[in-house]
Amino acid sequence: MTAQEWKSYGKFVRINNNDLFVIDTADETSSKETIVIINGYPSTSYDYHKILPTLSEYYRVIVHDHFGFGFSDLPDTYCFSLMDQANVCIELWRKLNLKSFSILADGYGSKIAKEILYKKNANLISFNIKKLLICNSVKNDFYSDLNTITALIRNKKLAKYKNILMNYKNNLFYELSVENKKYEDKAKIDRIWQKFNELEHQKEALVLCCYNEETYLYWHRWMSALKETNIPVKIFWRKDDFANIKDLLLNLASDHHNNIEIIENKHCFVLDREPINWLLMILRELDQTAYHSYKYEFATA
Image (cartoon, rainbow, N blue to C red; front, side, top):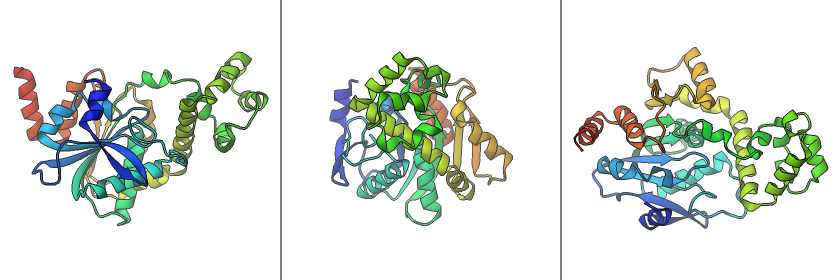
């Protein structure tokens, strides 16, 4: 399926005077249970095109492109905050008249899901969230391939300059980065500066700035949300998924309810390379009936 074919399969929902691209495999009259997917960064809803036909046999599946991603609009004043993205999810689900559903959150989307969980705990939203599944479907070495802006944004000294990224000179950029030996090469700094003058990389800088700052600022808020909820939570992890190991270890080391289950992805399945095995892993924890049905269909195909 091409990206344009995927686009024709979806629709646009107006949220805050901007168009949000949404895939919705059924409507509110469907008797199927609903699962909403909150995708990661820098992926889009299209990443799920290989598993959607199968998953939609068992569920009404809803997945959207975050603002600034995929086919969704890029609002002029949008800062790519995780908080904003959570509010967009909530507004979309209200417009679709959702009442009860499970959430599958992926990577970057897991932080958004935890903010939604926080709001649920505080009785700020009325949805019946049946289950929350947290995973990272992207191969870890993908992140090492992101351009050098990623590494720079992780520098705590640089993050606070996000509001003036387009105003400083090359020399100032160099001074901010001089502590990192990797960026002492002036030619590298010039190439990074050139990227900052491209719209796509400006957006990436804003996404990464917000992500890193909010992950640091709201980490305790989101860990508390996991501990305080009574909603069944299943957290998938891989031994090569370094981004989530800290959260997992701290969760294991602290008191937590029996509703939180940590599941090892022993074979390191990822969505883009092994979609069938990845989906089987998810279905096994989401719905045993669907899991055995799909496993049988796959084995006899």
